[in-house]
Amino acid sequence: MARQVGVIVNRKGIIRHVILGDHHSILIPDISFYRRGLGRLKSLRCIHTHFNKNEGINTEDLSDLALLRLDAMVTVEVKDNLPGQVCFAHLLPPNPENQQWKILTFRHPRDVDLPFRDFIQELEAEIQKFQDGLSLKETEERAILVHASQYPRLEAERSLAELAELARSSDVEVLEKVWQRIPRYNPAHLLGKGKLREILMKGLYLGATMVIFDQDLRAIQLNNIARMVDLKVIDRTQLILDIFARRAQSKEGKIQVELAQLRYLLPRLLGRGTAMSRLMGGIGGRGPGETKLEEDRRRVKQRISSLERELKGLSRGRKERRKRRAKKGLPVISIIGYTNAGKSTLLNRFTGSKVFAEDQLFATLDPTTRRLALPGAKNVLLADTVGFIRHMPKDLRVAFKTTMEELEDAHLFLHVVDATSPYKKTEIVAVEQILKEMDLLTTPRILVYNKIDLLEKDTHAFNPEAVYISALTKEGIDRLIEMLVERLPEPSHSFVTIA
Ligand SMILES: Nc1nc2c(ncn2[C@@H]2O[C@H](COP(=O)(O)OP(=O)(O)OP(=O)(O)O)[C@@H](O)[C@H]2O)c(=O)[nH]1
Ligand SMILES: [Mg+2]
Image (cartoon, rainbow, N blue to C red; front, side, top):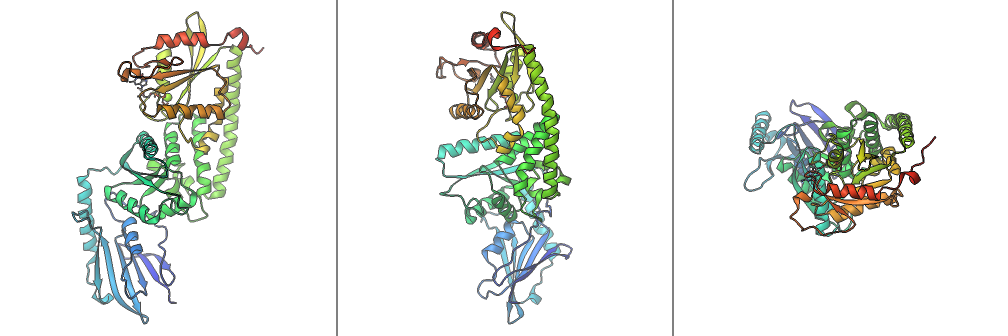
């Protein structure tokens, strides 16, 4: 046939895949569902023919060997329809010379005298010994973060720092952050293949379990990269979705998150045979659920419409609640702001409640509303909200539309800012941008700089429009209450009681 042929063989010697290539190359099928343990190899070897007299084994072969963690890559030269030279390449345990692989050559297949089973066990034991030295745990997710853009260095660093925070909020350990400056995105792999390979190799070497891209990956890019390497591949949107999936408590919250996950997944299912579990396995398998993963597009669509219906029912209840609340004629103050600014802590401080507040991004997903008595016997409703973030994934915004709509009821916003954040300016802008998109810039708003207990006295720029507080030590809270009372619109005009 004048075409390359190959087989993928497991350690028992059973052939799992037969591959037919063209004259120059073969394409290894998706073998991502063969799991491997920490420090382990894939328990699969690839053996294929080629017609190239000069080159026994090429860089494609070697990078497949390394990135897919194959037991071995074996090539057999074919000459005049007969087998010739054999190249046997295998990975090496980490070594001072930084050699990744070793290549053995044999004149003919019958000269191959390698006791494969013993050989591979020994090799794996050595690799494992090194990994043990790193004291990595099987259950933990460890990631290498990749940012690829044209942004100036500072902007890229800010973005990577935030990605690292997101990872931390998802219990993913960050092994390394890689910034790659690229003039334009590669449509197939985001970055050039050579550079990408280098990064992926590094990830494997450090013992990573996943690669997280700061840039959103298009379906084709996600699929291509996931096929190239034996690591989970996710992007920023998926990471945020994962955090939301962890935090969702209420029925409505859970449905909203699953909807967002499925809407994200749908366009990324490129026909049958795509490794769905790879795409949507999430972190530690917190995707939309193993069984659902195997569903095809049609089933995913069905699930989406049924969730949408359910959500509609729930949002009717929410509307009722909003109406009832409006009837009581109490002014509503919404605490908004960038994620982790201290919104929930402030609500707790004001009302003595115990809303979950944590040094994590998106600690709050199911917003709480509490009644608060202000001086002068004024009663108000104080509402905590979901934190904002730059580039909030579109699917999430759509899914959380009804939750976000509650912001329309607010008569006053407390815009909480983390005064210790080096990026507070861009964070304020990001929040204002979202308000603008929701047509809510006309709602009165008080800018509240929080966490001043962590700042040196008088080092913060003084903005006469804003108040400076510490939700933790109560500093400045009295001033904030005064301001609240001043700025609240008069109930007699603004709160028409619905009869
Ligand atoms: N030092 C100090 N820490 C604070 C203060 N206010 C909040 N924090 C801490 O900041 C972290 C985030 O607080 P949260 O109240 O969860 O923030 P949030 O804005 O509700 O965050 P999300 O719900 O995740 O968007 C927690 O670890 C708080 O203890 C403060 O005034 N001073
Ligand atoms: Mg919160």
